Amino acid sequence: MRKSVLLLLFLLISLDCFSQSVISGIVVENGSSQYLSEAIVTVEGTSVSEITDMEGKFSIDFDLPPAEYVLTVSKNGYKTEFFLIEFFQSGSVSVDQVKLTLTSSEKKRRKKIAKELKKEEKKKNKEIDKVLRKAKKEKDKREKELRRLQKRLAKKKSENQSRFENSVITSSQNTDLVNKYALLLGVASLEITNLKLYNFIEDWIGTPYLLGGETSEGIDCSSFSQRLYTRVYDLYIERTAQKQHDSKLTDKFQGKEYLHEGDLVFFKGVNDNSNDISHVGIYLKNERFVHATSHKRDTGTSGVKISNLEDQYWKKRFYTAGRRIRN
Image 1 (cartoon, rainbow, N blue to C red):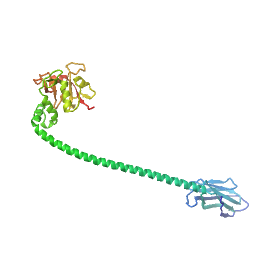
Image 2 (image 1 turned 30 degrees about the vertical axis):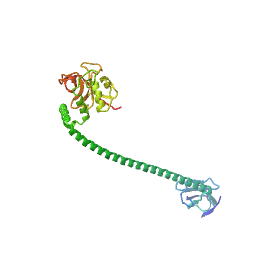
Image 3 (image 1 turned 90 degrees about the vertical axis):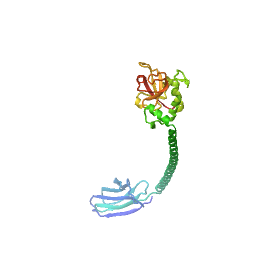
Image 4 (image 1 turned 60 degrees about the vertical axis):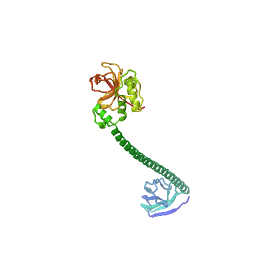
């Protein structure tokens, strides 16, 4: 270990007395001037010692006889420095800066750490670049998907426009049908939009009621609702009114105000406290529903016809409604 001897101070003190003396200073790193905390400053041969604070400062107070003393400054990772101090009178000495030099092993250690930090930073930057590239790739993908959707929407809009125009043409061709059912239901002609539904009804209206019947020669309520759902909505439902009601695919509700065109309406006998369903129809609009029935007092006819839910006969027997859920 290199020993450097620095003559910091010559102080004259009287040889016949002891005196209070103070020495203070700042310890820094040689080459960087970085303050060194926790450096140990010791007066050799005595119990006097001090540790530098966070700013590298130290201040030693001691009562010593006039003599020469060796002051050492040490810290892990640094070469120890030695200083010769001669006191000849009391007083204070301030050392501007005490510079400690890194040991070879510490330099190597720091160089290794710096290298590892640089390597870690490079790795981190590489990961960041990877994340950014991935984000850009995802952004490009989203933009591509957006363009595809926009193109698809434009095509769908064009198709909808074509369908609308075709619908207008078809509506024009079916003016008589629309006007007929608008009058029967008591609604404006513009509300009759599902021509497939009303064409189906037109084909079956007036068909005789026949319990268990499934043809144009005679048909019952559940067979009619089953055929209507199959042809108009492309949806299979059960064969009997009871099974159509009990199906887990029938979302049941009782509020008539929630009825939509195509909902099932279920009926049972007056004062019947059981859950037995005796009849089923298909709701249209404005309290009207289409069904196949043997009852004819409300309209004067039986078979496939349109009836009113507010008619006393059907009002007393209405049980619940149901909206079919696609499986």
